[in-house]
Every structure is written in C-alpha cells, then in structure tokens.
Length: 143
Length: 305
Image 1 (cartoon, rainbow over the protein chains, first blue to last red):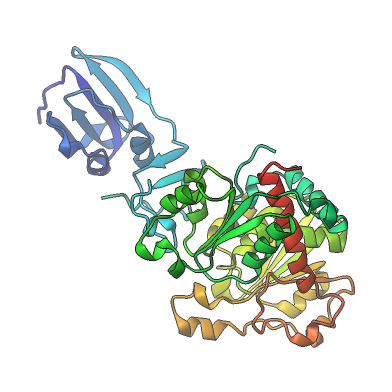
Image 2 (cartoon, rainbow over the protein chains, first blue to last red):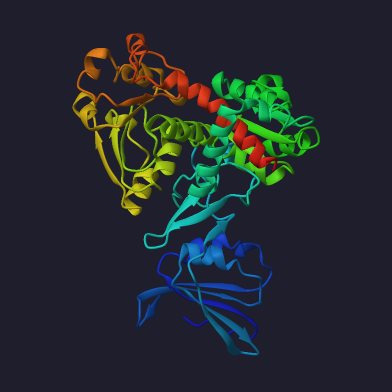
C-alpha cells in the first residue's frame, strides 16, 4: 500500500491498532477539506500492529482528546516535508468535550449546552470523573 | 480563607472548618453580638426540591444575623418551570441578592451556579451527591458532643448509596487522625464505588457490613440515615429496602453509654420515637447546631467578621 508523504501537516503515529477511527471521529477529521489518510493495522516493530493518521494540513489539534483516547501516540509536525517537531503527550488533567456523562442525575443531562468536562482523579488507573457529579467516565464519547 | 463558594465540603481546609466551628460556638454563646451583622444583606434561597430543615435553618440563620431572605421553595414556582437554565438563574439572582443557598435535584447544579454567579453560592444539597452544610452541622455536633473530631469510630447506617450527607461526612471526617468507619447497609445501598476508591486511596480504616446490632458496641457515633423514596427509580425497590434498619431501645442496650446518635432528619421510621428520650439521641440538637454553623458560614462567605 502506498500513501504519499505529506509536505505540511501532522502525522499521528503509534496509535494502538483499532483506535484510529475513534481518533478520526473525536477530532472531527471528516470535516477537514484537506487530504486525510487512516492506515489501519500497519506493521510496527515496537507495537506489532498500529494505526496511523496523516493530515495534509497543520491544524489546531485537540491534544487532550488525543491523549485521553490513546496517550502513547507520537505526534509529528511536518513542514516542507521534514519532521520539525515530535511530541509525546502527557495524560491530560482535564478532558473537555470528548466524553459524555452517562449519569441521568447529572446536571449535564438537562442543561445540554454545558461543556462536558472530566477530571483525572487516578493517574495510575487513568480514571476520569465528571466535574459536576463525580461519576466515572465510561468512555462514551460525544457524537 | 480564600474562598467564595461552598460546593463541596473539601472546598474547606481542616483549619477553615475549625474557624467556622469556633465562630459558630461564639454565636451560640453571644447571639446578641451578631444580630445586626448582616443588616442590609439578602440571602436568596433557591430550592428546586422540597426541604424543611435546610431551607428554614438558612432562613433563620439570615434573620438572626439581621439580614433578609428571598427565593422559592420548589421548582414549579420558579422560572425553571419555563425552562430557564441554572446558569441563567444564577446570573439573574446575582443582581438581586448578596449570597445564594441552592438545593437542586440534579447533581452538580450548584457548581454550575457558582461558575455563573457573581455572588457566593452555597450548595444546600445536589441530588444524591453532596450536602456540605449538613456536614458542617454534623461536624459542629460531633465537636460539641464529643469535644473532638479525631480518634473516633463512626458507624453510618442505612442508605449509604444515595445518602449525600453520608458522602460529605465521610469525606470530611477522612481528614482527621485516628478515624475509623463502619459502613452498615444492605447490599444494594452500599457506598458508591468512587467513594470506596477514595477511602482506599487515602488508606482510611473502614469496613462494610450488613449487621447493625453487632457493630453497635464499637461505635462512638452512630449516624443513621433514611432510605429516601425520591432517590429510587423503582417503587418496589424502595418498599423492599426502607425497613432494613430500625434503631430501637432494645438494640441500643448493646451500645456504649457515651454513644452519640446523629441523624440528618427527616426521620421516617429508622429510629423509633422511643429512642428520642435516650440521652444518647442528639438529632434534634443537631438541627439547632445547623442554624449556628450556617450563620458562621454566611458571615465568612460575605467576609463579615
């Protein structure tokens, strides 16, 4: 399979195999007017299999969302065909607009315009809780 | 104290709680010194669900400080019935009052109000989540009755899943040295997983049991709670569990002579009225303490000495 290198843009590498489409959806990449490639199940020396996303444009990426879905990815910023920056992400303290609180008693269930904000409460187990009702995130992402 | 709102009891440090308790005790001893402290100030009580004690104790607190009270006592008599958001209500009320006490059936509603109001917001209970002023009441009661907040075994009995007063008090008491918890409930009403996780993380000494009578002899405090109908989606589950634990004089024979029995009230039938005359019953005094600690809190949030 051949996908052309990009000149200016972003490559999200080392995505856990199977999570490429989730990231594509969370980051709303379908709405971009540039070329976007998703490579699924690419061979990887380090990971066995991995997904890769290539975006043919430098966009303002929601790193917190990426890191919440898959904190072990590598972000490569490409300019003039060269990698000018390689970034490994930290686990975000807060995640906004990525997960939906599923607690029917939470205020977010009735006040729909409230931002859905989750706070990291256990770094080791990567547990996030709704800032309003403290319910644990169940990885139900926003549509 | 750098704070503008009280949403969660953990918004207050142990030192800040101590200050509030000292202030409340001073008000109890010298109420005449405080009768004009809030002259010209207005408290808005925004109660989206029914309450007797909490609302009236807030109102009594503000009146005894010389202030005024405005507000509503059910969602139907507010603009919420027209679909107004909590955020908009908080912004609007900020134009009319100096401080807000809010009770809401949705968890997190007072936090949303605090994010939008330009005046202090007090959480007066949000669904099954938090009830920090009841916790302050409980802490003042324990301090007054036992003379300390540390080195204590506290039994919580009844609805530990939906009982917001339990959750707040567990969080608050977890910060004192030598505190042990005995969590007595039916299987279906055990504390939420997030709280169990918090207690484990803080390495708090606690055990969960279904046996009330067997646990009584080891307790310094017994905190009874009501199984609340309004927290159940299913009436059949409520009826099955409401009579799970009823405290009677016979059961109390096994308890220590210096036990203190607390209850956030209202009581349904979980404490027999025959217990009321027992000197260990503190729940009506507790309601009185609630007024004094709310007076101390209002003064603190309004930055009045």
